[in-house]
Length: 230
Image (cartoon, rainbow, N blue to C red):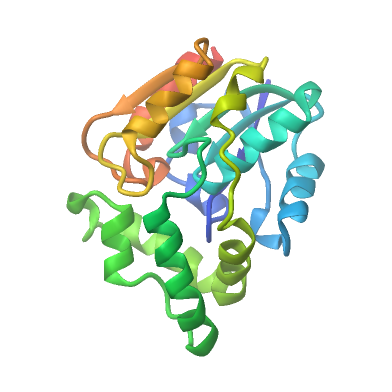
């Protein structure tokens, strides 16, 4: 049975994959990297190393996908395959950096009660803004993981080296699943990945999802994963 090691994004845990996993059937073993337990960038890499299989099939989302690329470049012998979801290897856009730098002092001073409507509009397709099956999962993770995890993840990952030109060094099979409508990760950046790594499979979802692909488009993602891993 093939094992998949899931790496979540900012302020996410295994609940991020809750709508996806039932659609993958029973041919896989699922394992989760508890990224939220890290208190530094180094610990994030250590957690991936400690919780992933010796030859891992990494399925990674957003921040987790950037970290998984970093991990695969540093540990090529540890990664059997790599699925990158809603992420490019470029790091954060300047606009998103500015947003986070503005949010950090507000978080430090105030009680955190979950994602604001403004933030939800940045990460979700408009048609999912009122879908409790999606929004409730995001808000539950946000509130339960809490302010300290969010601050740690913001502070330690705001500066991300541009790894794009190094993605050609990846020797394992790579699949990228991204959304044309993602406001955080420009489609052009995602496409650029394949100019450096021509062997990478690229699937751009054209509608029905923003940034939160595992929650917003679980069936489309499941179909691509099943094709990739079978």
